Length: 181
Image (cartoon, rainbow, N blue to C red; front, side):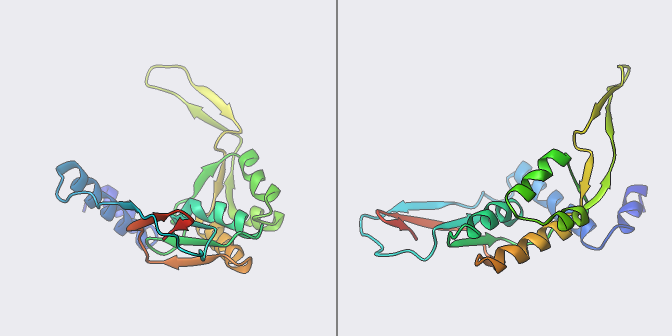
């Protein structure tokens, strides 16, 4: 077994499966094994007469941030997620100042934010072969646990009236004068 595969075998279960799925998709794109899915947007002149949602967001990993913010302000929000809305098992890096927005928008409490932070360090080194090392402080120096973060945001989104449909892919939309179906 190659050393890289040995390393991946030590990581949580979905990691290697997710990597293999991404590799298959990349191979299909490169070799055009299948055409890209057609997005169908059409227009109709007839009014709908009413809509169920103020906003429908496609894509939960980042959409949960916008969706939660708007749902807690009274918007009727539907979030569609192709898979299950869950963070991956590898931490995300961000700057602490960028995380402050989650508190300002009241998406997380201070305690939840601190729990979401899985690691923190002061500086990053940037260096290319043969070049000088450049140290950058406070840029991408906070590791966030995406599993905890997305689970917490998902619970908040649902608690403030947001609606989530998982295992649902966007396939088409029809634009009417008074809304989209």
